Length: 154
Image (cartoon, rainbow, N blue to C red; front, top):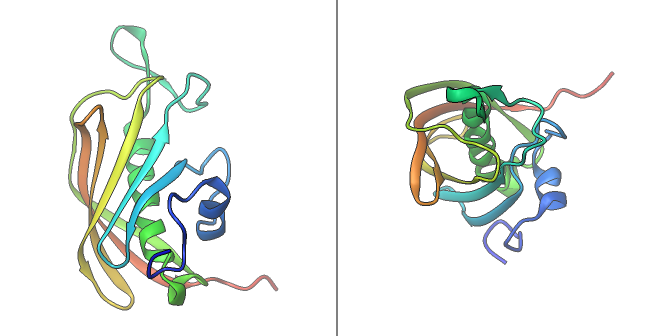
């Protein structure tokens, strides 16, 4: 167990205890590495039954860039929300800069989602994210987020 009190790898149920996302919008299958306030490495398996595939070059179904970006953001959110003092909070995606999409992601690919802290403050931060398939970068960018309190249901 690390500083976060979580045992790695984090499987789906442990991820669901951290993130508010649920199927079909939960885009992280497993967390392999988690270094508090520094780094996260997670995995998303791309299957042929993903409901958000679009026709890519030559009619091959590909993962939309927006879903790829969201998967990177969710890995980063796990890093931030895994900290015990942040578990009752929410991460709000504020923006992404210097994003580059390098190649299409298709069924059968396994995404390796990596996030590294660039800047971290009590209520805001910036992460550098990468998504890789077979060791090759398919997407990268720098994401800004804000931390907020969960709204209580009335």
